[in-house]
Image (cartoon, rainbow, N blue to C red; front, top):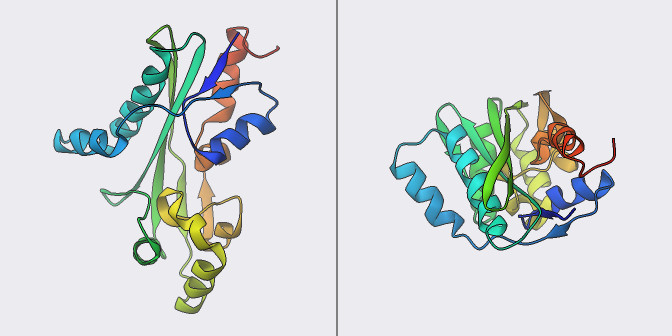
Length: 196
């Protein structure tokens, strides 16, 4: 049975590979920024935005391809505000300064579609607290992390140097990385896509 990841995320691809899944990758043909703008104009909550974007990605590929198609999305919410991936190093610095010493939520949504219809969805909301790191550490972190800070909401990868930014992480580790892997694997086992 064909399994397709509808995402260009290297972290999601690595999680699925490391878990032993055999799958294809197809980047969905969606204008994610326009979709986000539309959802926000409607006043949709960040949790619902993440879910809607995961669905949009999965359906975009599922309408063209047979098999089980996984779509995922993640939003970072801090005190009612949403932070998207930073566009440049200056914006990454601003994001990290605004998160320093504060807790935030990562709203991580996954959707599986088949034959152009959603057949499963799941949401996890890990809560992370950044420590009150110094400006010197922030300079060090941005210099060491380089372009990687532009590839994720919050400008960090918890699986690497970004771990040093935090003093507390509550919730599912895989969801912090961008995909609620364990519930997804359980669903795929139930449907015979993964060995039981």
